[in-house]
Length: 252
Ligand code: BGC
Image 1: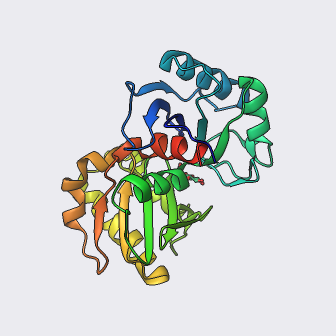
Image 2: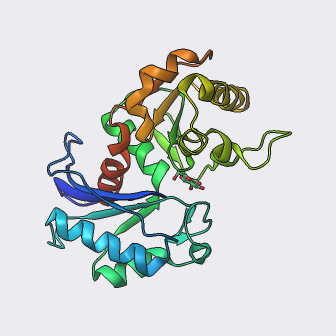
């Protein structure tokens, strides 16, 4: 536990790497959000170089400011254990040590959807919600975070659910990237989300769904098209939830 009032959060995604300095009391960004494209192939050395650019641009190089880094893979004791939208090199890779050595400082390292869940639990839509909250991020992939009575159950990978008769998994078919790739309208995309969220609802009986990721800023265009028993709301912090949650976790 630190007494830090500010921390830097960096959110590594399949498409972009984003970061900012975050006020830990309010969860607000204290600097502009910096974003660089995720290097093609997303190999460790290239991702590290891009993270360095983000940190230099934010301009906080002081080691006293905690740094949290979020990554789009299963993260178990600092190791990345999957690689759906990044280089396969990351599988079984000691990523936390790699970033710490490369950046010359301590970091806190976690899954990107998990940290977004933490951000919404501390500063957003999941605050004070009892029972099971399920946050999903709809982006390059589908990230999922489960919170029960405010406690994170890490590394659930429900973006990789499979649907019979369908090639690939849920994220290949229903992520925002699928909508872009196949040039779908919101009306075309909505039945895919309907299947996905109904399936999650059946499997887990959540009390609340929260939808994050870049497309959450257009939530009014697709959430009303869904028919679910569970309330479903956009993430308060939209696509910044990963940055905010990474920062928050680094200081706890
Ligand atoms: C990964 C998850 C990640 C999600 C969102 C998925 O492909 O398996 O770990 O949270 O993408 O980035």
